[in-house]
Image 1 (cartoon, rainbow, N blue to C red):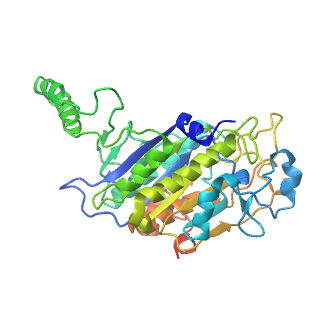
Image 2: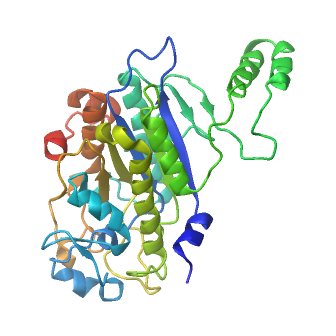
Length: 378
């Protein structure tokens, strides 16, 4: 069996830090931090947070039942791979939102991921992301520490990104070549190489690439007095079409990684945990029924996992639709009864101090978006 350590060494993840204050540009230091964990592929919310009190669960999922869930209340359990997160729930530092998602129903990875990052319900119609726009309106866009600028943190301000290489000899980069190329060019070319020179005058701050190290590093940076105010961690391989597993298996290993990311963030944040909210995003859920390969296919509703000191109590929030076939979306998927954009908007309002109406209209382009701030953070 693949050990937890070996799995984490072989898994893939990426990190972006944004909202890093710029001297002379950023008006105020951030009031709080937002960390987004993107679970690419479509997390199975019914496996992560099984509704053990719904009598239709056993009828619909005989081959994918979690055998030893962590009991949260008489109706909901938690996958055994999320033991660390369960501790956060017990401490009042975590909240689960179930039967939720962005209102996107076409089940395309590419469209779904674009919608959840842009916050625009029309796929590929926006060059900015909802978190980037929020940072803009909060007056603290800063620059991003990332290989590429993730869509979710792109704002309207044209700011640069920087990411240190993990190559032999890159620990002490020299800007001399960039300076030479800059002096030999005019216009945009000169500006580009001037930016490169500025970036690589700074020594790399980290070289680790495994998910837990990235999470700890992100937490430490968010905790600095003039550190970033947003972090985005991207975890792949939640697309469990075959041999999904129950207490063990591919989906369980992904949840183990997610659990360690939550714990790594808390470890790195230290005192800054109290002003931070963490939330997961996934482009869609999975089908309720098991497919012929003992897996699940692209669905609709899922579960959102939140953590951080800004939350006031451990709870599961849901408007549970039921798992009987008649209650499913298109007779196959968990119905989404809570617009997850409302959850994201509440995080922005709480962490960055923006008015809900501004967030609803200017960040998510939906003036009628319900306000969930009191329910989540009150």
